[in-house]
Image (cartoon, rainbow, N blue to C red; front, side, top):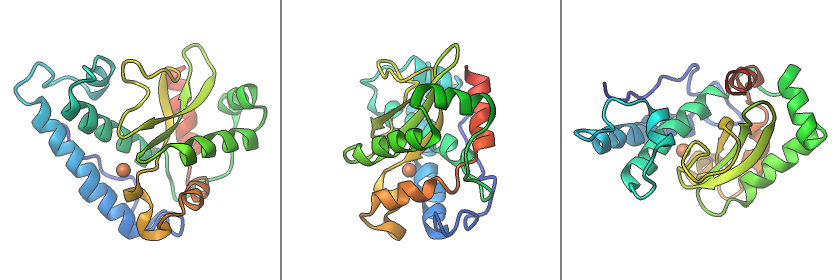
Length: 202
Ligand SMILES: [Fe+2]
């Protein structure tokens, strides 16, 4: 069964003013749709066809550029849409908050570490908060459409929160002001969803 572009759980304008509707429409309807269709083309007729995206990425041949870029793009954007909400923002609670405090000392210190990872990723890429197997969290960034589920990317077990820092994610509204976009992202993070990802992945 072919991969399908997942529907957003909210309208294109739901994240305004932090992420504008036009950016969301192009990002989801063009960019994510493009990764999805190119992923399908890349796995068609190969032994990867029919496998889950998690299975494909965790066993990925990193020299397979088409699957690496488009499979990563498919997975990364799916997570990105899921961890945002019009009712987002604030801080996590419960065991995720405890894990963040244990690793970084405070939510503010975590925010600084995540924002720094996002701001200093040169060129296109992603910033991640990942769950560590057995409990705990860590922060990192990856270039292009790579992610921590791929072979050789050492950043915890799997991402539970991701921020797209490709220019296509923010340029219409923020132009070159990536730090402003990163700051705005914290107003739309759905911490309940991130907490559920943590509980499922630890
Ligand atoms: Fe993107």
